Length: 181
Figure (cartoon, rainbow, N blue to C red):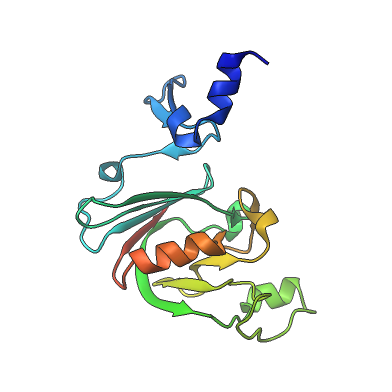
């Protein structure tokens, strides 16, 4: 391996960002992990209460604070299939540390062996923290199963590493606007 290749590999992912032109598409900034880094103004009219962008295709969550002093980018898990994906605008309506979990009726249909309720704890499918959205059953939450991050693996929610959802949980407030895109 050349010394220049080793130097590039040693850089943080965002530092290796580059602009990539795609046919008939605007220039999109991507990092080496292929996350699309998008400006908030392309998705939100303002940053009142902050903003969370969940990019299904790039499998990334971006957060901007209301005063633009904080920007975060997190790898995420996304729904298994398009029919489990809801896209559009919503907002954080509730924040729960140590959430319990109940599978939705459609999840129970697909997985009848699943329990009706899973109490808070290290094996809970919602991880350590959950941001409840205004859409019933949809959450941005943690996961203890780190194999899911970066994959199509959820039943509709957006999943983050537990340490990332804990950070986002502290940054976001009830009323934070969310776009699942």
